Image (cartoon, rainbow, N blue to C red; front, side):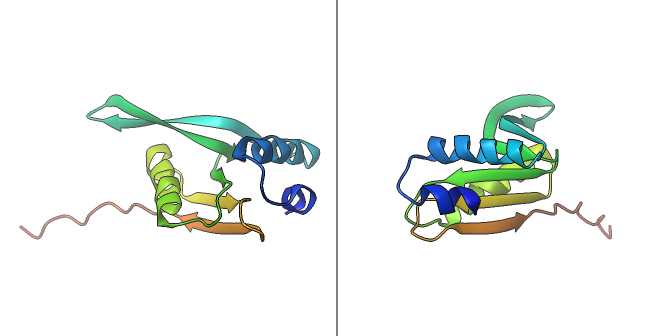
Length: 116
């Protein structure tokens, strides 16, 4: 909220990303910027995502600078959670006049065994 309060809306995403990184440093929040998240299939890496931030080694933080966030951006964060094996994500949109944020939780349960 501090970043949006100072900068407002209208900048490119990278501006907010840099400002948020400064805020994490000031508040001593542990983070990794542009965290690479490999996608595996049959034990091989087939793709790689890049989340804006990984905080506390367990929360993916994805930033946007759009007029409005949609289900596409939410799906992007869910895919990041699937790829990383993590369960919590935060989608923050600085592009709207008011700051938009959405907490996303992904909990992949193993399928029940067949009754056969």
